[in-house]
Image (cartoon, rainbow, N blue to C red; front, top):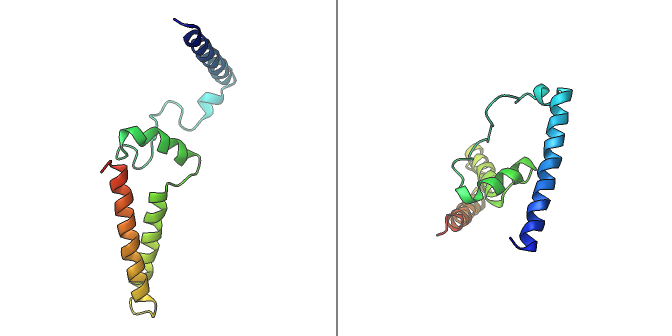
Length: 118
């Protein structure tokens, strides 16, 4: 094992020790047992297993941090525009909204295809 590998391994050991100390302290104070999810299976949330495996953890971290991926923002915009058209199909701006909806759907389709590796 070279010097870089030993440094990395020592660093990881220090992090693991730090985490272990905090977990032990939380267990002693009862903080862990007070958590609503204590002793229950992890809740990954909607769409976790439908997300490509290599993107799951990254998207989960972003989701937990409150970040919304661009594809989801597009889906939300599409849904809002679809509802607008549904409630007022004869509005003056309906043709422009229909074109915008078609454009957004195409953009979303292309982004999703890119994520699939296509």
